[in-house]
Length: 235
Length: 370
Image 1 (spheres, each protein chain N blue to C red):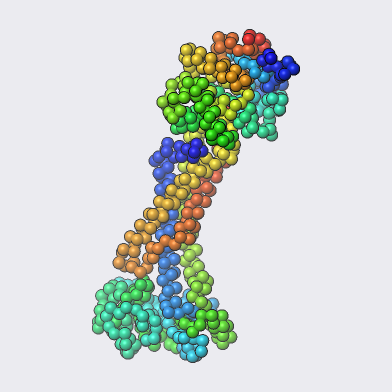
Image 2: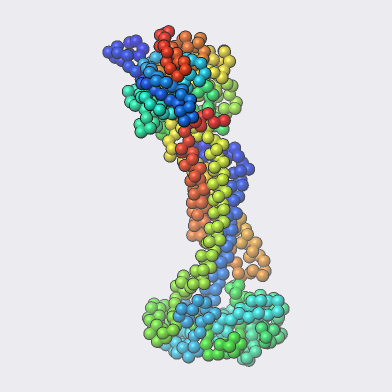
């Protein structure tokens, strides 16, 4: 079965933006100007463009962290708005990875990873098994009880990746996940990201400046000046 | 476990600030405990004066203070002859000054009074009380601060009295008091023919209601109350209790403001963390739980520390000779529970605004927060 299609071979959009407008500072700065875009199930999609073109804003809208001024955001066919079940979306449907790892420094690696399971009320034993599975895959199995300050930049980002996948979300939203790493660490993290997304059968939407990494995704969505200009199929 | 760690992590991160907050609550609790315990001890002591070998008191209806109560001697005589009454002892209270001692409590009592009959006599002979008009018996502490002993003359007010005994009681007021024959006290305080109260011991406690009815029917201007009922309803006691709780409440309010300040700082310094929790699925209630949990830990630790500090302070007060008998350092479980509960509620109230603020933090904005 081709990626992005359902059993009948039809493409199934898990993320969909319809004519999205978004501005800040009381409308003085317009970041998204009528964005239309679709991401299909199981695909890896790179969102490219210069700084300030609206990549992060689009990711935040898909994750329910922010609201559009107008237009529709649909995740798995369900509109995301202030009234929708955002907790379910954040706990079970999407996982976030940011440029900065955004880990809590006083907690250990294991505790940071377990935060989403605590939020979702997942059984402790099941959560622990999942933690061991992900940390083994990411090579962090021996670092479980280490504090965040004791980890390298690459290890921190791998921890953030594990945390994002703890509750088995089917959509991973990554905002410059390798932006704070050197070239070698970036490659390692990105390889791991693609591997995990493939194993988990998840969909990846990743904002990046790195054309080299973007080229390894199934699709490349180009953004400029608040608009999606092209959907380049590269995979 | 992780939830608990999220609660504790900020307290450990800012140890000095946490310590100041805990201290604020601790001193508030200690102050409340000390004031309430001292005043309740004083009330208890005054009550025990009235309930010395008796279970009821009769006094003038509608008086604001027992010092202003006038019960006629003939009423005492008549009541003591009632079959249901085992004994009825009139007592006259008076306050007098002496050089260097602005307040000396005087008790005008008969020789049959339980205080005279049951106290431990350190000096003198029980039977010598009320043999002469100018005889007095001193409490041990009164003898101490008046520098008097058996056989000496003491100046009380404008009169001189002959000390015929020194007695020791556990009650601070009595121990610092002067006991005069009732007739002498009536003359001394210009209250001839009256006493302040009559303390009553019934032959059968079950007859309390019948006794009260009989007093009501026979003496329109007198009232009979059981000791516990009197302690509950006496306006002076109620004012004292209200004052104690008000002073303690002000202390707790200050402690609560300290907690509020700490919690506001706590929320501001962990805005980014709160955003991370939100992005990872924490609900507003869970975020609120972390903030309230943090303030509850501060409050409970503060309250427990306050209980210990307050107890030590009360014991220290008890050790001061001048206060012996005035301070009862016993901590009643109910009082401890009330104080703990109030401290907890104070902590929760102090965390209310910070928690609401934290619950309303928008993750997307907070993640930009440096």
